[in-house]
Image 1: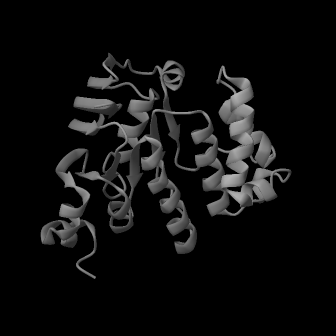
Image 2: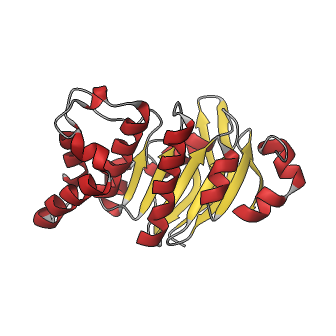
Length: 236
């Protein structure tokens, strides 16, 4: 396992947002965290990224992670694409992408990767001199994801990447996420769009009020009538 969390608990003051959660992510696996707003999904991702204090244990590549240690976690290969995307609107598309290679030591290879990323996603190459704020919501999410991929993460945390996107943009983005499996990247995908997410995930954890209520292989969860009724809006 590249990541294991045991007894994870996160509090916001007097409110317990995550209650004794256990999760695992294997090398090259896409794992989904699903649930409604307030279920604790994003809080788990932020705790793993090192942005929140937590209790319990998070182990990444046999190393115990410490709370509030985001900078070190990035160097270890844990990269979060936050809800809201976190792009810098006044900077150009290319300047935003360049931020993804900032911490890399292999500068010549990193520059080559930046050019290839613009070829991989032609819309980013075509608009590389445009301000990022001029992109559509789907294009901004693609930019944020591409920037994260350029940093060569081992574990990519995606927090609500489809939020506010049109169906076509969501479908394209989920295709990009599915492609990461072939690259050996591990992904923890936080989402509310359960049915679409389960189609690209290997496994999933379904959360309610800070607790895991069920988990398992994505296909089995899709076929489970109880899961379908509670999380997928029925069998339609």
